[in-house]
Image (cartoon, rainbow, N blue to C red):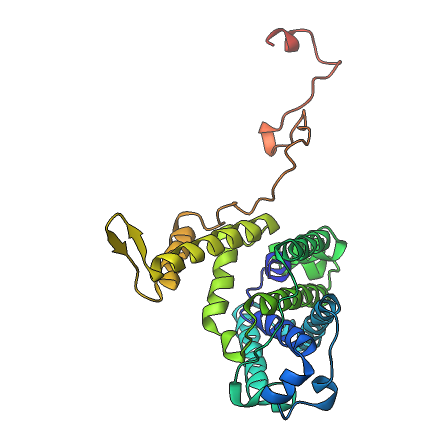
Length: 316
């Protein structure tokens, strides 16, 4: 999501549509044809017989997510502000309804797809995550991303400078859709049960909270926010099931995770609107420091000049 939201400044509530497309693609391409014939009898023939290797299915899932974003982006990326956010949410609802009721590409009436094989171990999942991060970073360094960030900072001056904001938004939307599709494929492999209703408001709220808490203006912020929310969800999930401390069992009511995440997000918005990272990227720890760091205005540090009078260096 950062690939689009962080660079464009347009809040998207519909990126789970591409996650759903990737998860659906991975499931249809890796579930055994025998299992598909029993749980999805109305499936289209080319999908019923499809079976490919997991890594091939992963790449196809990314392509499907990217194409879905590209096609929808031609209509959505002409909108601005809250209109764009509402339109992306409408896209998510449209995709969820299609996946729920179109039996030619899935089970009947919103039933679950089961039998997704677990083909990726922890090392493979981490490798895919690192590749996704590298691709997102590489896009952030591209000329298109820099132009998009310029339009984010000043929406009026960017077009006057010759920047085609709509085109660069579509590019970012397509790239982020492809990465979201890969994420959906990994999610399907981990969850092993895929249902259209899983891609709803709870999931959307969690992903938005990751960006806000970490800092949506930097890739490092998206990574930190993901780690914080994932750790918090795991810990609260364990406590919800009950933890024995001494002779007492401590437990939280079901659904406490969303409440705690919501409170944390509100506190971050009030106390640190730019997120935990402050919108800054992580710096390589062994990178040499600039001996003359740039500053603004009169406080800018100037290197000593040989033409200065001797008295100027006497105070050192």
